Image (tube, rainbow, N blue to C red; front, side, top):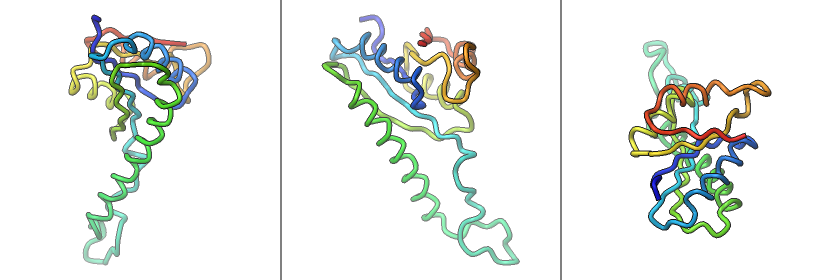
Length: 158
């Protein structure tokens, strides 16, 4: 098999579910292949660490409890991984490839996907043409950005 590390960015859209099925169809029969199913958590959607804990007048932007913030972040990532794993379990069928459910925190979905591709030695990205927030009938901005930003093949799926 030519592609051994396939990335499927997952946002729960119908296009992402189709991309997952296509990726598992490509890699499923090969035990040496890995399909990475990843959701990107926008950092802007997470709580601001400067607003945690008691904020006194002398330290208006001090984080009250770093341990609490870290637990919040870990919990958010674990919840996202559980959601991705549920989608993988529904789609797995008889695939023999290794499947990795993952979640990353990034400034934007595009940045998170590009970073994942480069840091995990991904050799193919299979993704939906548009996600949950894109306009109908057009290539989504994240898909378009990934096409322009990575040096590996990108298969977009409707």
